[in-house]
Length: 250
Ligand code: AMP
Image 1 (tube, helix red, strand yellow):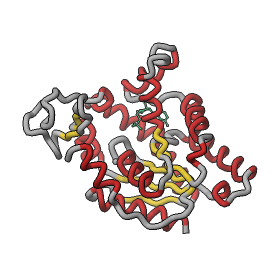
Image 2 (cartoon, protein in one colour; image 1 turned 180 degrees about the horizontal axis):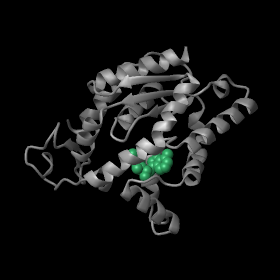
Image 3 (cartoon, helix red, strand yellow; image 1 turned 180 degrees about the vertical axis):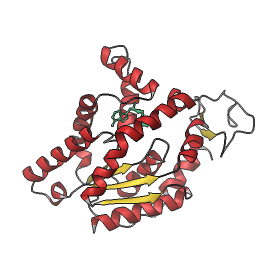
């Protein structure tokens, strides 16, 4: 499906009404569809999607930062399937949460990814709940985990190809281009993101298992947690994500 159509299909999704969505976490392994689902929630409820992966990709592309030691640290970690340091990512999140567009809520995509980041976020939210007097500032975080099998994750990620010219996304297993290597729309040679290659993706999954899986347990223990089946078609996953958030907020 061309990019414009993909976006229209997402925007058209009917969401239940929720006046103050508050802080929402979408958890799940790389390739589980967190980014796609976060964008639907963002559009439906008019709250920002805060993706640490996107912020970091922006930082490494920024010509004023790319060649600094910080830019190089980010590039090395991302290209090898490892995590960027907690302190750097926490600072980026703190800066982003200070923007005024977060006043009704926000959806965090790709953060927290370590127990240290989860504890840091708990502390930040507890401080703002203590200091704040609005209903939003007292709202606890809700966490939704999108669960997908490793076989599907592997296919979704290592099969992904992007047209560098029009940004249309293909998947060699599920939505291949008509000609094996080039974009159907403009015949540009398709590319694979460096962190989608099989070896890097396997490393990302190992990182997820050892560092991020405990984060899921952390939120499960806190109680405001739900799991949705990410193997369903996209619309159904979206419906399950909305239902879970509304239920957790009630
Ligand atoms: P994503 O697009 O969320 O899959 O993130 C891409 C890459 O950015 C990850 O593989 C990590 O190298 C880095 N990254 C994103 N979020 C975090 C985070 N919360 N903590 C550390 N590294 C992160």
